[in-house]
Image (tube, rainbow, N blue to C red; front, side, top):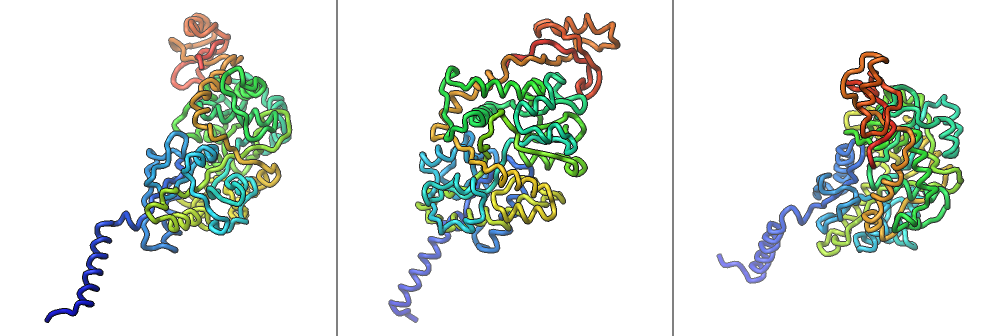
Length: 455
C-alpha cells in the first residue's frame, strides 16, 4: 500500500536523524576529562566521579585522559578535545590569556559560598569565574607533636635553631635528626623561590626576575638555609615516589620533613597519631602565606561542539562536596583518606569528624588567611628562562659536604683514611666521616667528602 506524502516525509526525517546519530557515534554524547594526575590515588578520583556523574547523566559516558597526556598544565597544553580539565592554578593567568578557560557566570557555579576565601577569590575576575576550585596545598612542616622546639617555631630562624644544620650528609638521615625537603626539580625550586621572596616582601602579584641579577638574594639565601638543615643528597634526590621522604620520616629517619598535606597518606597510622604540622616559614617576616590550588576548567572549545552545558555540569559535579569526599576520603582499597586538602569547608568538616587531622588542616587555612599561588601570564616563559638559574643558585655554596660510595669496603677506623682519601679525590677532601650503617650506607661503605656534585 502506498504511504501518504506526510507520513513518508516523517519517515525520511526520522531515518535521517537516526543516520546522523549513528554517524556522530558515541563521541557526540561523551565528555573528555583530564584530571590532575599528581595525587596519591588517582583511580579513586575516577571512580568517585564516574559514580556521581551517573547519578545526574547516566547516558553520557566519560572519557578520561591518560596521565601521560596531561600533567596538570606544567608543560602540556589543554587539547581542544578536552571538555573539562584540572590544572595547577599557578598557570591561571597564562591559561586565561590563551583563552583556554571558559568564563562562568556566578549562577553557573554550584554552592559558590562553600569555598574557603583564598580559593574562590583566586579563580574570579570581577564576578566571573574562570575555574572552580578543587584542591589546595601548601608547604607544610611535619614533626612529632611532642617536639616543642619545632612546634613553637614560627620563623625560618626558629626552625633552624631547633634543627641546626649539617647534621647529616647522606640521602636518608641515619636517625631522628635534620630536615628532609624536596629541592630537586626546576619548577619546584622556581615556585619555592617565589614563595620565599613573597614571604620577605609580601608583594603580590609576584614580581618576576628575568636574570640572575634581579633575583632576591635574601630569598636565595633562605633556600640555601633550608637545604643546609637537610642534606644535599636528600634535597636533590628524586626517589621513585613523590612521598618517599614522608615514608622515611614515618620509618624513624629525620626529625622533620617538608611536604604537602597528602604526605600524611604515606605515613603509618601510628605516625599520624602523634604528628604535628604547620605551614613551613620561609623567612622571619610575617605576611599572608600563599597556598597552591588545583582548579577545574571548562574548555571554551565546548561551545563549538555543543557540549558546554554538559561540561559546566560535569565541572560542578567534580567540585561537589559528595564527589570530593568520595575522591579524597577513604577508598581505593584504603580505610584512610588521601589527606589532600579540599577547598570546601563542608568537606573539611565532614572528614574531620572521623579524621581529626582534617580539623588541624582546616585551622591552617582559616588561621593564616592565605592567598592563591598564581604567577602572571608570563609564567611559562618565566619558568623556561629562570628555573635552571634559580635551582643552580639555591643549590650552590652548600656548606655541609656529601657522602660518596667508598672505593672498597671499610672494615674499621684504621682502614678508613686511605680508602676515603682516594674516594674523595675529585670531591674536595675527606671530612673524616665514614660509615657502614644503614640507611646512610646502603650495601657498601660511604665516605664523607667536603664537596658535593655541581647543581
